[in-house]
Image (cartoon, rainbow, N blue to C red; front, side, top):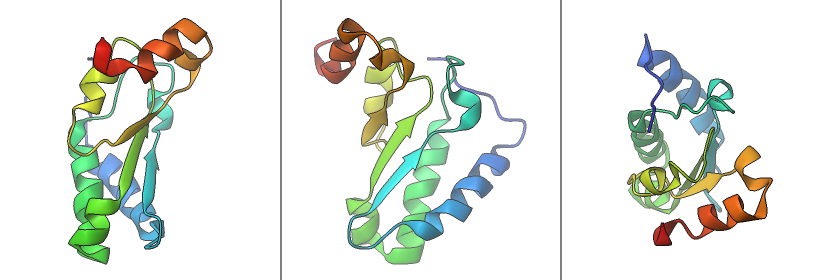
Length: 114
């Protein structure tokens, strides 16, 4: 799975840190879809999602962080969905272009069978 190499991973983390302030306590959900990843075939490094969960834990506590659903979008496709979904800090995927054909989308939804 091609991962975007950041010259400065701190830039991505800074963007995520600023958006973590908006995670609601009642129904915690965080959707991460980096603009640079859409349609490029590159995905975000897993360290970014670990940072998101740890930032939520620091701000709202461990229980809210555990309950927070982190969804990742950005070049999610049949070839990489399984590898993305085994990452401990990704709980779901936002599927864009790969959802335009039924066969492709069905494989993504049933990624555990791939």
